[in-house]
Length: 568
Image (cartoon, rainbow, N blue to C red):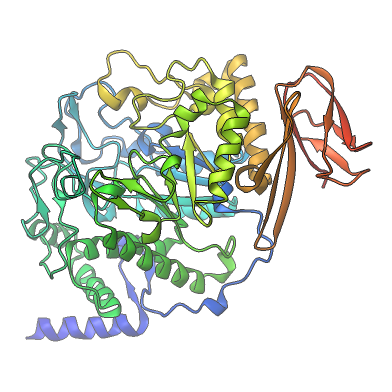
């Protein structure tokens, strides 16, 4: 009885003043129940950042940079693995260091998406490609804690704050579809939480959702809307870590406040949105969209947006802009030609109507190979300004699980940058694209070849420096000018190839003129009245200043590219 009364008193205190969980959050004050006051959010009348034209950098936390060698051997994950299938040492602190070094600023990055950093299974498994640990972050054991191989909650907080100070947003990679595989150290979750069979056959809607992605990857029963008890193994884990009471109290607060059922998906939604309301995470990259029913995504989006408003109301001095929480989906196989829909064969689903702002465009690499610049640019601009108004797509040339990237041998590195960074939509740079990190690694099996360590030493090579400068010039131009990724495209002339982009939305007005495949030396560029006569422009690729005369400019540079914008 005394313990029951103690718990009730603790819960009431939490409701009144908020809870503080030092063991879980390294002393971060948890006050989760204050109703968001959006009137406190400072409005930025003319923010330069727009999500639909952003420049995202995606990295695998473990493979990017080792900022703290003391956490390299955490949890005794020391069994021999297949090549590049164990923990290599990259961590949260390493990402922060590169932000502080100005690496992302120089590359024109305004959003960082890193692989999941919540606690992973402790054991290892062999899925036919060699013994593997959860270095990639997609095998969750505990959504409420940061994996010690990646760092600490305090270091994650510092990463987010450092990014925000450098005008960079953070996308948190979230997994709601499955737990990690079952091992001796990682028992399977209860039947009320997961299914362990059948495996997905992808023949229709049901055989894509109510199934496991692969063998021994328990599938969360996100369709279950009934109350379930927490897994005993998780209860025991929290108890051993000295944080059981605070976790249970916070759960009570969340479900009392939201009136949601204590179903598997809603527990996970609670745990995921904690990071938003506590740290000010700016958006989610959502894993395995098509493997979960749409209503679960709607609930996640609703709760994440509320959590973001709550953080904003408590931190008005830390706001970057007045954008809402952003949700990017990995709807595997989705392409821009699908417009708003994904076709399961037996039904089409509009996931954009269920909380998603943007989808990764798996089609881009094919279009980039088959279409010339004008066909590519005009096609994407037309679709974004008709069928996808208010939504968007994210383009990429390589990724962590795409075995057929645009340029697997890195023979088209300059073209990769030009097409990716100048195509309408969001651009997603995969770590090392900008310095030609090899995507073919000897003796690796499966996707490990795509996940090598960042080749920082290559930057000392003169050819690599020149390539990096190309990515940097295009990236900074895109970051500084929303019109590049989010503006309407219009060809000015076919030969020489010159086009304009114009963006007018929510008080932001921006326009640019770009030329590609131009002759080296002096070239005359038609402006087509995009800018008034006599305007001083800057070619952001060469740094030359020029003045418009007779609706044209003459640019004398050693480059085949011209990036024109008004001098500021």
